[in-house]
Length: 94
Length: 94
Image (cartoon, rainbow over all chains, first blue to last red; front, side, top):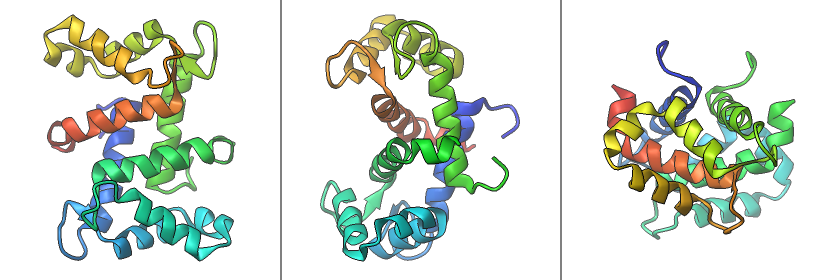
């Protein structure tokens, strides 16, 4: 990854994170609801704590499944990343 | 950035990249069309070369301005990142 610039490095890190959790059950190119929840709990523990309402997390996970195929593909995962990055920008950048 | 995990690191790298180019003209929290084009040329030179059609790049830049305010905010920039990451996944991961 040494000869990649910041943007390329960020995209590869996102893909590696996604692949790590998608590799578990079923389709390796998509997250099941359970895999997505594990990803959130492990990679964004602050988000889960901040939500104080487990139903909200479940709701968010279901809302990510934009095409209704019961799985979250990489593009749908990126919608989550966009949402988290926009909402936690202050926290992440300080 | 050392105590952050891969996902948090990726988000910070994306914000730093965005901020670097948004800091130029006008609104520091958004890219002008010119700033967005410079970002693409500098950070994703392969994308520009691969497109072989400058109008396509202009079209893509205009399509990013989802709310029509003539600027590209961070969330709109993330739509570009999502699109590039999905379409250049093979190239980036090998």
